[in-house]
Amino acid sequence: MATLRAQLESALAEHLNGSSIGATAYPGLSSGDKVLPCVIAKVRKLTEEPIASGNFNALLEISVEANPDSDGTFDAICAAVEAAVWNDELDDDLEAAEAGLTVHGLASPLEIEFPTDPDIFKAVFTFEVHAAQI
Image (tube, rainbow, N blue to C red):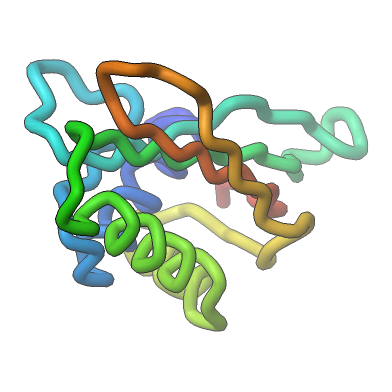
């Protein structure tokens, strides 16, 4: 059985790829080169609550990375990612993508950061879901 982290990352990448975001989404644990523009879905933190219950609060991170552009590609991808995350089907899509995964919906609001890097455009979306393996 895959770890909860691997299941969530794979399911989130699959959800994003199925949402026509304009770039390829990769699970955070995937190996190999990633072609820009790209989207990386990863679990930043898992907290079991209550302890020994099998229920987790998962802090998920989606990183959008692109070459600096002036044609609006980066902004379009960011808008598509935000729409893909902020929709009513997110928990159902995550569960459908990975057998044995239960997701109980968003547990925190979506936060977006724009780290400064002169060589790359980057946006980092973070949000929390309640999840469990069954």
